[in-house]
Image (cartoon, rainbow, N blue to C red; front, side, top):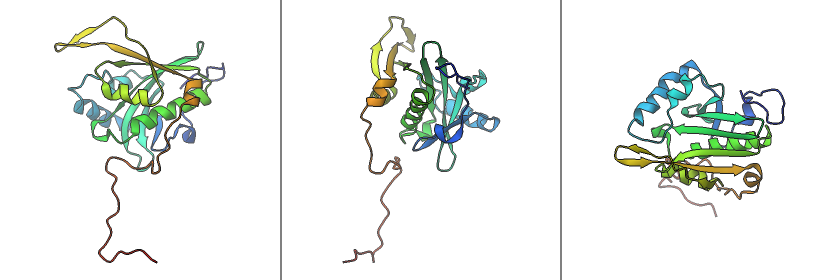
Length: 204
């Protein structure tokens, strides 16, 4: 449940308005527990800072499952934090290892921004990303986020340094950002052209 930044009644996920081109955001149910735990197990060696099961276990009212529109496959989760008074919100997102590089994260973020800015009236989104998470930094940069700072606080992680990178985007910047329009947006990493049979030919 997310509070309306304009002072209205808190709103809930309401179907079509939370659906993007590839994924849909919905509430997390009991049937999702095992899959979320599996996502965390598969990414146990990474240090992206996001844990699916920890987010759900906290009973956060604004924790959402990310599922594909075609097939309803659970591919990740997202947790949103809001400040209706200032019109600010933030989020954490994670995609299961076996479902990455399919465009699901970018579509989920774009869907969330569209709803939060357009429907709820929020004015700015800020996220904190670990400096070593190059995939997430690249993803958000490609969506129009701008780097706003790197706090001095650091933490040693297995001999390396973990530091946060703050990135943000305003409603006006999101609205004006020139998003690419792929010719075939449904193509994922497993997409390939249909094989032509030996008797295939063009019709003159």
